[in-house]
Image (cartoon, rainbow, N blue to C red):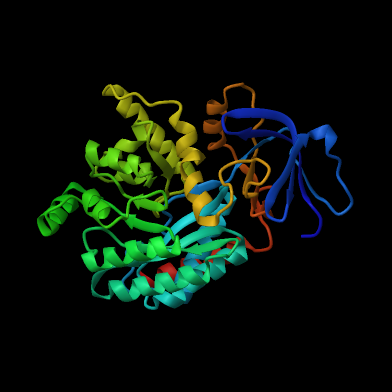
Length: 402
């Protein structure tokens, strides 16, 4: 795209404040300037988005996406099959205003090729992606080495990063955890793992290792601001506090919680925790947010009130520090020098409460999605790629493997 990207006459929502009639200038993948709309005319060569007063928000982050997951698959997927399923999922996520996905690649017959395929698809469609192979079992160290090599290769990529991941704490050996902790520090790479999905899994872990999961990760120096912990359902209050103290980013999937053991993660209700919404292969972020509100109302009935101020955390502020460290650029904001990951929604704010406006934006249709300064969705339509063929190819893969 030549020239500047210019968002004209938007209502800007950033860090708890609404700013009507603003113009946002994007250059070189970053927000270059924010001005009163009247002060920023369209220049020759500009790509101008006429917002017409609609709401502009920072891009949404999916904290644990499982892009290539096929429920009930009878066999491991080939890299081509995994890429096809992931491409459809990425396309739908972009249309839903998701600009960044944190993902684990699993159930594939060639991990190295599948991970590279995931990055290739993300670059082609324009999604910001942090992905890793889900290391586990007797091949865990070999899988980890593939992750480490990919982390070195993508260390300066503007759009994708490889992380160091393991499938879950229960099956991770101490050897694997030591290797992940060592290389995460040396490579400054993200760590992506799953904690306790059920009380039974937590009990089995304690029986095998004689220590609880969070304490075991802490012993291996795996708790920190570049760690993403998914499925943190079966943790107690002390463990939740330790996750908060170490600034671990907890990927919260309310819909999965509702469909599972009907309980969620303690961090959602406390101020110190960093939380990000996650689809976890079950629904999209809009559906996850609806489920989160249901859990909040249930919690209120038993005396644990939902804190309004948690809304910005769950819907964007939570992963900002994580992305700052991984991409070494300001994230989660619409401000000069920040990554230009932007979402324009079909919402004309009629109230002054930024928290209520942000919550309402999750129910509004997405008009434009911009990732790293590139327009990937224009007035609700995927740009540069046809959606229906992607969906058809993914459906064919599902039929073939289930």
